[in-house]
Structures are given as C-alpha cells and as structure tokens.
Length: 114
Image (cartoon, rainbow, N blue to C red; front, side, top):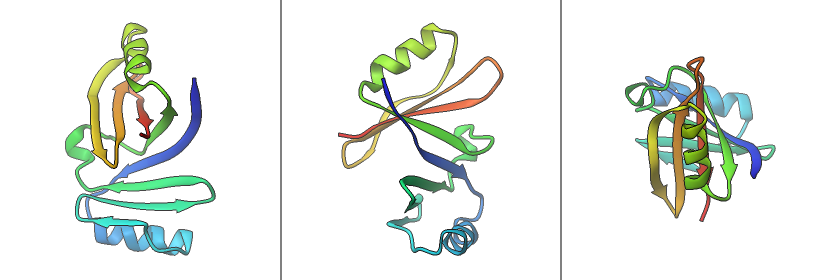
C-alpha cells in the first residue's frame, strides 16, 4: 500500500540556479539546503533538487511513492519486470529511498520514512 506521490526530485546541473528558480516559484525558502540536496515543502509536496541526479541515471524528475514497506514494494516491482536502478539506501533521518525503471524507461522512486 502507498501513501501516494508526495515527493518529486529533479536532477539539476546548477543547484544554486535551480534553488533560485524553485524559491521564486514556491515563494518559500528550502527546509534543506546542502551541497548534495535542496528540499522544499509546499502544499503537502516535497520538491527536491539533486545535483548528482544525472550521474545516478535520472533523465528527468522522479516521482517518489511513499510506502510503508520499501523492500517489499521494491521486490514486487522487480518481480513485475522493473529494472533496479538504486537499491534501498538511507538518506538521513531514517528515510529510505530506492528507484527502478519500468519497461518504457520511466523512473519510479520509492520512499519510506522511519
């Protein structure tokens, strides 16, 4: 079961320019502002900027489905034919993420909070 799509992460080449753009769009300052990730929260959505996203194989924004059992959902997706791109990894504060590519090349992210 999922809690829906609550997070989207954009791969960016220039994090300072991307941060300025999203700050102007959302009219808020980021809640996370690190060289490796900038995050905004607005209207129940988490919008992330990842300067290493392209190197991780991100070809565009990746929607992250919030799940209660990331390992179970990841296994189910791989069994259904998805290609594993990033195995389960902790990214801080107990938050776990993983991602796969579907048969059409679309990226699908999974996210589980502690």
